[in-house]
Amino acid sequence: MTRPSIIRRWATALCAAALLCAAAHARGPAPADVAVSALPAEGRDVLVRIKAGGPFRYDRDGVIFGNREHRLPERKRGYYHEYTVPTPGAKNRGARRIVCGGAKTAPDACYYTADHYETFARIRE
Image 1 (cartoon, rainbow, N blue to C red):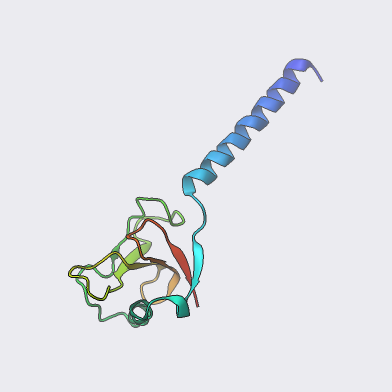
Image 2: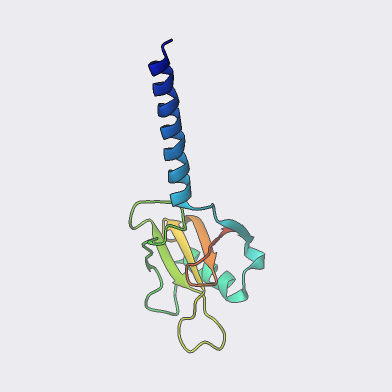
């Protein structure tokens, strides 16, 4: 093997590794897990309502979640829907949400955030 072909192979391998690392970093770390039993009571109630198709307390419940922060696995627009988890004492919707992906009453996965989309934990049943 000639020296230029070895260098080309090394360069190709380094570029591929860099692209894989960049892609993994752009998606961010996988969300942690949280058991349903560890959710606040209001969150458990919202999960029951999601599976029943409602009723929901807020008009915005069930709207498409755009995942603009890219903190959840990348999916086609319209896959994720968000729901408010009421915060006792809050005068507005508060920061707590559940975001579910897939069919509205039989989601593939649901995620909980207590800090308005800064961090997520995948809900495990």
